[in-house]
Every structure is written in structure tokens, then in C-alpha cells.
Image 1 (tube, helix red, strand yellow):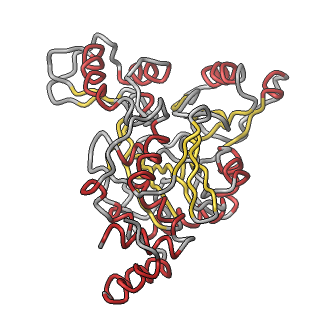
Image 2 (image 1 turned 45 degrees about the vertical axis):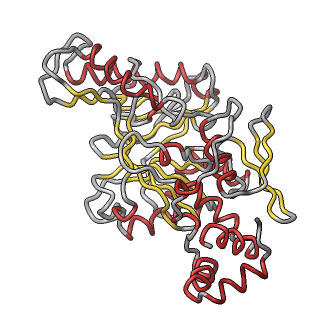
Image 3 (image 1 turned 90 degrees about the vertical axis):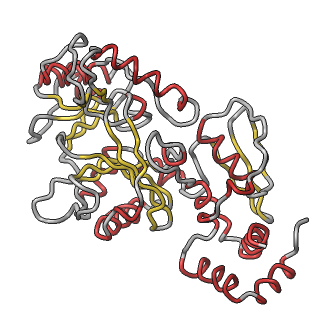
Length: 387
């Protein structure tokens, strides 16, 4: 039975603790719903159409919260009606960010310049256009090798990115490849030897934190690299379809990395030896995500990404960061840490279904951010789950 707001309101007044909790959440941008154990009273999983992973997660959370939801399966678009307001989700796209802000911030070259202009640490970069490349008038200024080259826009999962480019010959070869499909490529100084993190920020609060680890295999003293990759791919199979990952598969970056290590696919690593097979930590290249407690990120780094989100005008954003340790300030003297890029339509599956670590159902907090625009409905929903 759905209680009306007056009943819920009166009940809350009778219990001052819960009433004040709601007021605090609305006034101080805290999360109550995001802390609920939804698995304790979860909606029966409905048969879902063939949806993208993030669409499934948002859809199920909307159902679990009892929200009125309609799915347009042809477009993978979900409509949620709250009072007289409609909110739309499509895949990983939410109604929290303006499309224009997303378009600007997801352009790697523009994001880099916007953050650099306000003193936020990013990689030194140069923009190369297809037109200049074809005219042989392109250049990279004073950038120092090694470099990373990546299309500025419309890429997903590290597509067409190449790290640790050590000379002009390889850079020119990769640019020629990119310009078959892309108009602009961002060339940046490569910050190797650092750990990679994804921090998910919502309304200036970190709601998710991961360490992103490049593709790797674990030596057993028996199997060679190729066989160990096959073993790792078998281990990953149960996660495919639940989280945005793919198999380990040799590509140009794998080849560069193995040449650097002096190994081949036939090399047999020692027992207990961990072999990192590439530089890019993207899960679609065979990378791994380990969920971390959000308390690990220091206040200075939270302030840093909040400033970055403000500059990009984003309410919800996933920042990729490279640094020695996320618990230490990136902006401290001697640090080489940087913000790599922003994701205005962040993948939530990597938080909700990580390969390692505790699952973090961030979609609850994302819906809560929207629900708090409707205080009466927010109170009713709160009462429904706590009564």
C-alpha cells in the first residue's frame, strides 16, 4: 500500500531521528537512500530486453525503488516520471548533466585546456587535425616522448588509444590509423609508472572509487603468456554482460609492452610473477577494476576533482586520475599526478559489479540526487523503505 505524504510526514514527526535525517539529507546534500540495503527487500528481477549493461542497472534500481518507469526498448531509453516531471536515461546517459556540458567535457583536448587554464594538473598536450596531418603541417610543439595519442571524441573503452609512443615514426603511424576514422587526435605526454584510479563524483561528493589495473597475468611456472591469457579470459567470462569488460587480446600496445619487457607469447613467467601486458588500464582491453573504500581518497584530492567538476559544469562525472597514491595529495610538491580525462556519462557497472572488492550500488545515490528535487515524494519513498 502506498502511503500519502501527510501520513508519512506525521509518522516521521513521531520519530524525530528519522525526520531530522530527511531534513539533513535535503539541506546538506547527504544520502539516505544510497545507504539502504536494497538487497534485503529487492524487487523480483523482471525479464529485461536485450539492454546495454548500464541501462539494465538503472532500470532495475528504478524498479527496486518502486518508481514509475517506462522503457523504450528500440532506443534503450528509460523514462521515469516523478510527480509532473519526466526524467530520461539512455545507457549510461543520465538527466543530471546538460548535453552541451557533456559534449564539451568529453572532448579530451578541450577538457585538458579548460582544466589547465585554472591550474588543475593535466598532461601537457597538443591537438593534431586530420587536415594538418594530410598537409604535413602538423606538430607537437615541445612535448617530450614517450607520448599517448587518442582521438578527442566519440571513443569508448580506450578505442584507438595508444600509450608509451617512443618516437615520431610510431606516432605518425598511429596518427595515420586514427585519421581514417577521426578528425582530431590529442597527443599528450605519457605519465607512466603511476597507479590509475576512477573517482565517481556526484553533487561534489565522491560516491565511488576504483583502482584501474592494466591487463595482467599471474605466472605459475608452467604456462606461457598466451596460455595464461586464456586462463584469465576464462576467469572473466562470468562477468561479461554484468560489467563493461572484455577479454585479454593482443594488440599494438600489448606488442610494445612485451617488447619492452623482452618477452613473447611463448615466455613462461616464474611462479608468483605478475606480468603487466599493456599500459592502458581500460577493462575493455583486459584491464581489471578493484573497488576501494571511498574514505581512501584524501580531502585534497576530493577538493581537486570538485574544482574540476565545477570548471566543467558537471553534477555527475567519473574522473580518471593517475598518481602514486590516491590517499596523498596530487598537487603536493614533487607529485607527477594528473587528471587524465573526465566522463560525463560514467559507466556505473564497474562500481556495481567490480571484478575485485565490494560492490557499490551507486545508481541508488544517482536516483536519490534526482528524488531530492521532489521533497514530498522523497519523504514518501523514505518512509516506504524504513517503516
